[in-house]
Image (cartoon, rainbow, N blue to C red; front, side, top):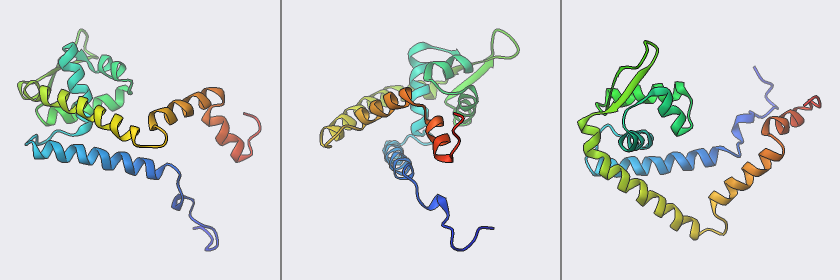
Length: 164
């Protein structure tokens, strides 16, 4: 139990507003899907569905690698896609792999998902044009700074760990 005079550190966060903003934007995309009658389809499904539609069946590992996510995260996404009837999985080349392919339902919604993806990118470009500094440039600047000095080292310094 903490002392009453020590503030809860989770009550302040520089990242929370960004996470909430991204979640709100995803919620708006999900609302657009619902308005179009696309039940059971979430924004996080669009990228793997489009990738499978463009490249054909892939193993979970291949799909994860192509989307730059972990195998575990993609395995969870594939399970959710399968529950919604958007993909089916079959045994891969060996007993340890699963091949993922689109169902007819997913193939039918692909044109909309691709159009929405492109429209979202245009809407983001429009939004960035109205800002004093584009978020995509801020992200590139942060990435460059973190290449120069990794985040782990910055945290260790703040903890007083000078061995980093």
